[in-house]
Length: 357
Length: 277
Ligand SMILES: Nc1ncnc2c1ncn2[C@@H]1O[C@H](COP(=O)(O)OP(=O)(O)O)[C@@H](O)[C@H]1O
Ligand SMILES: [Mg+2]
Image (cartoon, rainbow over all chains, first blue to last red; front, side, top):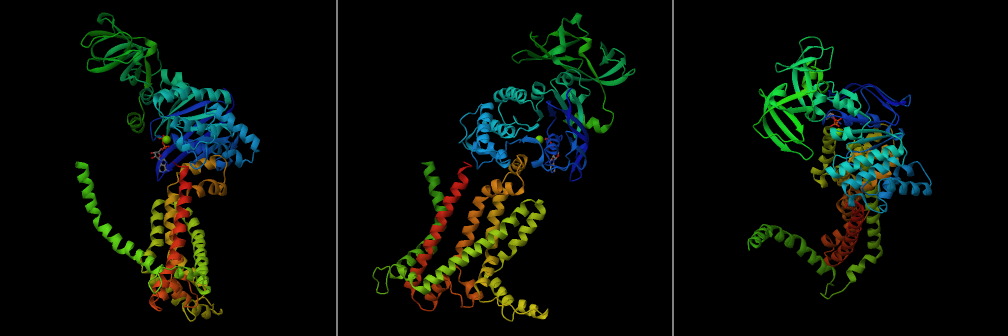
C-alpha cells in the first residue's frame, strides 16, 4: 500500500452532549478510493466535514501529509469537497462556478479558460459555460460540482453522497465516470454513501460505520465475504444471518443441525452469529441436503430467482438460476468455506448498534 | 359550470377588499390627481406640478432626497452586519435579539419621535447629562442630523427584516463551498453572500427610502420647523394654506419619485433572482 496521506487520530465529536463520533481512528493512503459506508445518521458526513475543516473535533487530531491540520480553516486546506446537494452558486454561470477557486488563487485568464474547458471536457459537458446552474438536471449539476472541485487540483477530493439524488441508471453511469476520473486524475477520493452496492463497486477500501464507530475496514471483497460482525453482514448485501453454536473448530450447529465450516478458534459450544450469502445456499433433493425445508416464495429477479425456504420455522433466502415451485420439499447444503462465523456483540451497546439499523 | 360558481364565490369573498381598495386607495388617489392637475378656477393645468421648480419647494425636495438617502445608507450599514451576526448565531438567541429589535415597532411612532425630542433638546436629557459630567452642550435638535437620527431609529426594523430573511435563506453549504474553494471571509461576503442577499437589500432600501422621503412628522418634531422637507411643505399646504391644488400637485411629484424607486427596485430584483430561475 502507498504512503499514508491522512490520519484521523482519536477523533471524538458530540452535538449537544450527544456523541456522534467516538474515538475514531482512520488512515487514508495516497491514491486510495476510500468509502465511508453506513446507515443514515451514523456520522459519515460529520467525519467528512472534520476532514474538510467545517467542523472541529472535540478531541483528537487530523494529520495531513505529516502535519497537524486540526485547526486549519477550510480555505487553507488542500482538499476540495463535493457537497451532498451540489452547492453550486445559483447566481453564477457554470463557467464562473468552475472558475471560482481559480480566481481566488489569482490565476491568469488564459489558465482559467483552459481549466474550464479541460474540466467540462472531463465531465462530458462541453459548451455549458454560459448556462446557469438552475437550468441543469441533477446529474449535470453533479458533474459541474465535481468539475468545480477538481480544477483546483486538490490532493484529496471529499464526496458526500454525490449520487444520492440521481436515479438508478444515471447513478450507475456516474459510478463508472467517477472511477474513470479518479484513475485519470490520480488523486485520493474519500467517498460517503449509505448505498452498499455503490461502495462495493467503486472502493479500494470500505469503512463500515455505525453509530459513530468503525465496524470494519477492508477491501470490498473482505467486507462482503468475511464480515466481522452481524451488523456488517446484515448491512452489506442480502444475507442469511443466523444465531448458531460454535461446537468446536470447523463445526457449527444451526438450529440443532450440524454444518461443517472452516473457521477455528471461537472456543467450544460458544454462541456465535453466522452469515451465509443467498448465492451460496445450494438447493438439492431432500436426501442430499444437510437440512430440508419447504419452498414458501419464488420471486423472479432477472439474473436469478429469489427463493425463500422454511426450515423448521427459520427462513432461508437463496438465489438460484433454477426455479423451485412453492410448496416443494427441498434439501439445503452449504460449502464449508461459505459459512462466515462471527463473534456475538460483546456489550449491550454494540448489540443495540447492530440491530437498530 | 362548477368552476364558474367557485370563481364567483371567491369574487364574493373579495368584495370587502375591493370596497376597501376603492374607498381608501383609488378614490383618494383620483382626488389627488384631480386637484393636482387642475387650477383653482377648475381648469386643467400643470402649474401646481411645475410649482416644484420654485426655489423653496425644490430646496425642500432636494433636502428630502438627501436626508432619505442618508437615512437609507445608515440603516443599510447598521442592518447588514447585524443581520450577518444574527444568522450565524443559535436559533434561540436569534429570535430574542430579533424580538428586541422589533419591539420599538409596536410603539406608536409619534411617541417614539417625541421621546427623541426630549432626549436631544437644548436642555434635554442628553445635554443635562453632558453638563453634569462637565462636558459642553451639543447642538443636536433642529438639525438635519437629528432628523436622520430619528428616521434611522424609526425605520431601521424595515431594513433589518428583509435582509435577515434573505440571509437566512442562503444555503449554508454555499458558504462552506466558497470557503472550500479557498475564499476567505471577505471574498465569500463579496462574491456569494452579498449577491444572494440582494433581493433583501433592495426591498429594505425601498421600505426605508420611501417613508423617509415622505416623512413630515419626524422633521417637524426633530427639525423644529427650521428644516423644511417636501413632506412638511405639502402638509402645510393642506393644513395651513388650504391650497389643496398646490398640495396635490407637489404630492404628484413625490409620487413620481416613489414610482421610479419601485420600478428600479423591481428591475434590480428581477436581475438578482434571474439566476435562480
Ligand atoms: N450541526 C449539528 N447539530 C446537531 N446534531 C448534528 C449536527 N450535525 C449532525 N448531527 C447529528 O449527528 C449525527 C450524525 O450525523 P451525520 O454525520 O450527518 O450522519 P450521516 O452523514 O452518516 O447520515 C446525526 O444524528 C445528526 O442528527
Ligand atoms: Mg450525511
